[in-house]
Length: 376
Image 1: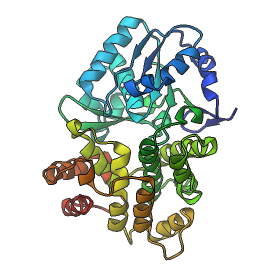
Image 2: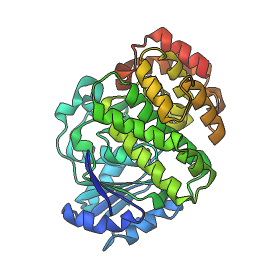
Image 3: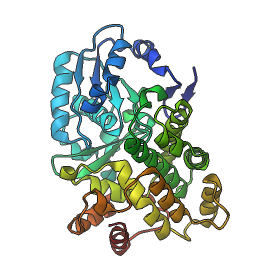
């Protein structure tokens, strides 16, 4: 079974979840605490994980919200502490994995937690957290191999917290766990992976290995057509394998940085009552940012066209528009409940977001306002 060592060891294959107990034992974890969400439990995936353990887990928190919030993390931390757990299993999509990372942070670090925010250099305060094994059930976030976690703090601000100590000790990527994922979630999470790859490539920061990985990820998902295949047939083993690989590659690539798409999506995701899906937001914003960044990285645009299987004179933004339509992504922000009145807050949040600083070209308030209006 392939074990890849980049950011952290990643066991990647159909059936990889069968390596869970051996992995925990190797990390010295005897009483794992599972962090997941209601949908994962309802789908029977939680039961599959508990069956892979040699005994009962120390505890389970299965109430993770779509966008993790600090107040709920405190509830999970209390359960973690009272259970006597000595390690964490993150099971689910990006929200569950972010929640698990925040639980590990809060279990070992004192608040207030805004001091750990990446935008203020909070990484220097972050030390070791309990051993964390991440098991993704979607192909999009790549959080299983990333340094970051996103959480809405009690201040109401959606913060990105970044530290090498938040990288899971081991990732177990089993495409089998994504079989049967509904088309709309397959599409949205898949476009999250695509956006990671494209924005990482376009980031002006210098990191050729990450950039090369990003090109392969977008070629795999779009150029080879695996995203469309996964959306069309939820039982396609091969498509699920390649989309989980594209997701993994997207997270490795975005060590190089992201951009304005994520700045806007993070800001919109702060509208907690609207429960906006991060991958859907990325998909809607992506073509508009590709238009805004036109001319800032011409050689990269040419390579992206090649990776996506487009002609030399192909239009990247139009290609993403077509892809979104083909896989059922809503065309506009207003289709998912965003209103014009949300614009000022989203623009302000984007300007303050970590991803804003690594966009392909510098963006100002007027740029974000125009992008928001076009996407609305």
